[in-house]
Image 1 (cartoon, helix red, strand yellow):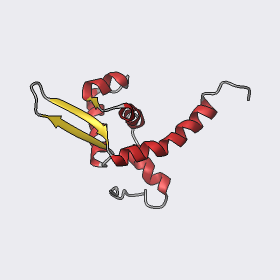
Image 2 (tube, helix red, strand yellow; image 1 turned 45 degrees about the vertical axis):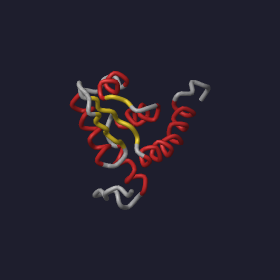
Image 3 (cartoon, one colour; image 1 turned 120 degrees about the vertical axis):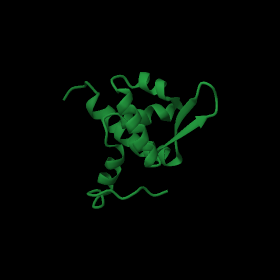
Image 4 (cartoon, one colour; image 1 turned 30 degrees about the vertical axis):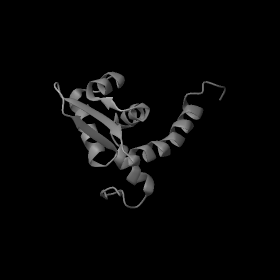
Amino acid sequence: MALTRRPGADHCGIAAAMSVIDGKWKVSLLWELEQCPRRFGELGRLVPGVSEKVLAAQLRELEADGIVRREVYDEVPPHVEYSLTPLGRELNGALAALGKWGTENLLDPGPA
C-alpha cells in the first residue's frame, strides 16, 4: 500500500516519512502498538500527557495513512481496539534505527 503524496514531501524520502509521523504523540503511539493491540483508554494511560481529543485525532490520522487498524467488536459495551497494519510494522522497523541512534547518542551519560 502506498501512502497519499503530501505537499512538500515529494523531494525527499525522509520528509515523506516525517509527514506521516509528524505529531507530538504519534511515535509513542506506534511504540505502544508495537507491543500489542491496545484499547483507546489504555493508550491514553500509556502515553501520559495526551488529551483524549488529540489522541483520537492522531489515531485517526494514522488510520487514514494505513499505519493503524481500528477494529470495532460488536459487544456491549462497545469494544474498539487499535493495532499496527503491516505498513505500520514496517514503519516501526525503520524507526528502530532512529531509536538506537537516540539511545546511543542522547541517553548515554558517558564522557563527552
